[in-house]
Amino acid sequence: MSTKDNAQRTQTAASLNGLFAFDSVARHMNFARAADEMGVTPTAISRSIRVLEAQMKVRLFNRTTRSVGLTEAGAQLLQRLSPALAQIQESIEQAGQTSSQPSGKLRINVSYVAYAVVLRPVLGAFLEKYPDIELELSLDNQLSDVVGSGFDAGIRLGHALQRDMIAVPLGTPQRRTVVASPAYLARWSEPEHPEALLAHPCVRQRFAASDRFYEWRFNAGADTMLIDVQGRLVVDEMRAAVEAAVDGHGLAYVFETFAAAELAAGLLVPLLERYRLPGESFYLYYSSGAHMPGKLRAFVDYLRLNARR
Image (cartoon, rainbow, N blue to C red; front, side, top):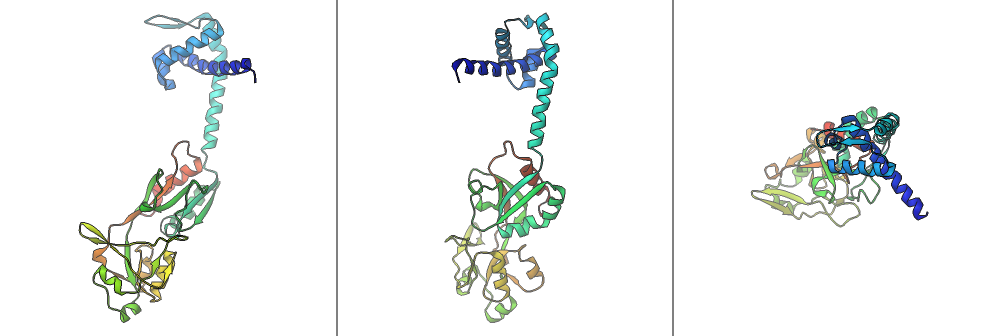
C-alpha cells in the first residue's frame, strides 16, 4: 500500500472521530458537555474539531469565550450527518449486545469435589435458564492451567488459585475433618490429638499426576499444625478417600460437606473436631474481567448468587 493510501486511511479515521465530536458539540452547543459525553477532555474535543475543519476546509462553529454556534456550513453538515452517525452508533451497540449474549460453548475446569459441592446442586437450573449455552466440564484434580489449557474459567479452593487471576468466592467455607468408620474405631483407639494420627493408617490423597499430597492441617492455637500422616493406601479423588474410610481401610481427611451423607447415616464418625481449622472457600477464577463474553458473565453471576450458602 502506498504512502498516499496510508495517509488517506489515516485521514478517514481521524475524520470519523472528528465527525462524532462535531455531532456531540452541535447537540450540546457546549464543548465541556460534549467532552463529558465522549469521555475525553475539552481540549481533545477542540483539537478534533480543528482537525475536522482543516480537513473540510470550512468553519463549522462560530466560537467565542461565552458561546458556541453553528455556521451555515455546520448546520448543513449536521442535517445530513446526524442520521448516518445514529445508524453507525446503533450498529456498534447491536454488535456489542450480540457479543455479550449468553450463548456458545463454555469450558470450565473443576475438581470433582468442587463439582459435587458447588456446581452440581445448581447445574440443572443454570442449564434451564440459559438454553443457548453449551457447558463443557473438565473434571480433574491436577490444578490445570486454565488459560493455557483453553478453559474459560476454573473452580478451586482458595489456596489452589493461579496467580494473576480474578477470583470470585462461592458459597460457604468448606471445613475438613478426620473421619473413620465405626468398625475401624472398634479395632483402633480413637486419636485424642493430631499427633496421635502418626500411629494410625491414613488414607492419603495425592494431586493427580503430581508428587504432592493433600496436607493434614490442624488448629494449634496461634499456629497451624501440619501432620505428615502415613498409610499404604493412596488415592487421587476425595470420593475414593470417603469410600475407603467407610470400608474401614483407615482414617481420611475430607470436607465435612462432601461426606455429609455418610456422617448422617452413621457410616463415618468425625474425629478431632476441637482441632479443626476454619474452612476455605471455593473460588471461581478466570483471567480477565475486560470484555467478558456473555456466556462467562452469565455463569459468574449465576454462581455468585446461587452457589450453596
